[in-house]
Image (tube, rainbow, N blue to C red):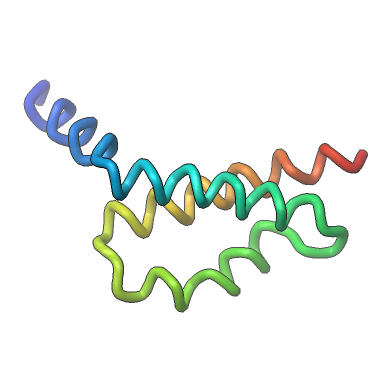
Length: 77
């Protein structure tokens, strides 16, 4: 079980996955700042971009975008 956890962390902190996570945070904050566009709209618009990605990179990108867009909505408040 500890080996699977270690393998998950090593796949998360690869450069391409980590870079996509940071890009997802920036995109999510931008989508969160814009009024009327929430995380569901952001996911719908970004879905074609992740179609050909590796699964762990795509899920990390979409999860970072979702979390950051919900936090980005509090910037304008």
